[in-house]
Image (tube, rainbow, N blue to C red; front, side):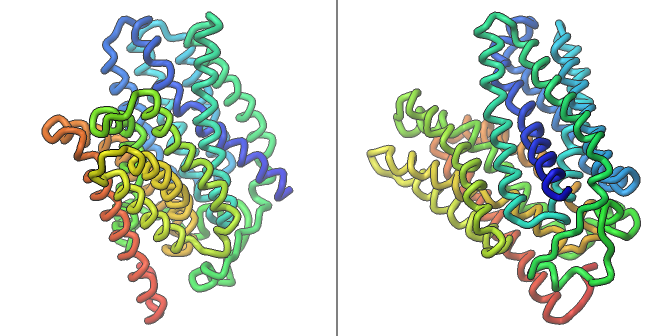
Length: 412
């Protein structure tokens, strides 16, 4: 049963990534068909981001009431409905309408699944699962490309992915009895924070205590620090994905084709790096993965910034930055029950998801504004600032946790 549920969760993570690239890959055709400016893509993504932030913050209460399995199934079903809605939309306002359940479903399933995996599975699975998210995000542009080149239209791509999500919803509903039978994982790191009296199963998926209000969660020592680190990392990731090619072309004189290829290697580095990290994550531990990831990111950014005539260091730096980025997100999530306790993990992971979406939403346009004043050379400087912020904040959390364990004081 453990293996069957794990396989279903792997499929769920692929499905999480599938819709994420559809708007970007299809928008050049979509905006023309709908008769709206190119810039209107930002409206869609902002609505989706708003929904994900709201549902992430509400996920703790929902998961405690309904259980992680049912929240995941309902959320994936909601996303499937929204994607089918996209596929029948012939006006921009309809996309805006369907973007609401799209975002709400994505945020709730992200928070519920990540917390469930953090509580019930080892660190290697968290890394591999997020690698599978990358697989889904990489596959969806090919689905969009096939639909457009085959003359089926962009709506068919949404229909295909929506049907895939609908099938997964059915599988998740059938698997609901399995979600309460998985025992929580116990690692050496967790032994200092997890009490022996805790139960197992679905009732424990969000902790055995009561609802943790937002204000109470934010007052837990170290929570603000890890939220800042998560905000910084996710802002760096999305800024790199969006602006790397522009920097290489306009700032370093790289030809467009080469710049696009190496910018994609940043994303492939994240996906491949998470797969590789899974093989040693349990031995290295989440803290070392976070610290090492930020340090490698810093090395990559330093190579990108090197003022040399050849662009080769910048190209290599992008690849290194992608590999450094790989373990940070899954390690932050997986370490949450260890750092803050099982009873608080669902609430805090929900807030972390909100911080992640906030960083992903705000950082790229912020750099866009900055670059209009300074020019493309500011790209590595902006990334370096985010690396420094993320590393400092995560190290501050580590010091708080170490001090807490030394004196034996409670987390609150």
